[in-house]
Length: 94
Image 1: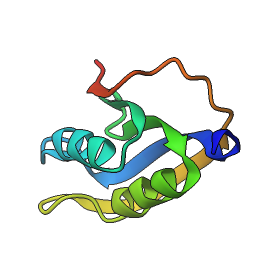
Image 2 (image 1 turned 120 degrees about the vertical axis):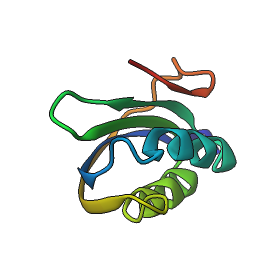
Image 3 (image 1 turned 120 degrees about the horizontal axis):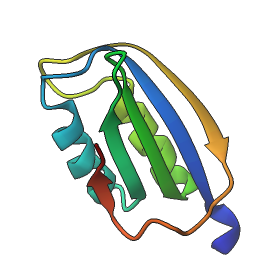
């Protein structure tokens, strides 16, 4: 199982601020049992950093590509990263 642990760094583009995107992402992160954070960026995008089992990260990524009702996701840039183990929960960062 330890070999399946990895990270993902995402940047979500579209109408993703002011629509509950961060709150919904926290719920999804916890639902998919990953740790990390979600954060609004000054350019109107949302940053998501998450760590956990690969299949759980892929499920979160699939959700990020759709987003919650009221949002419009035009693109998600992402890259896989090594697992660091520094996150203990999924939270909001400013």
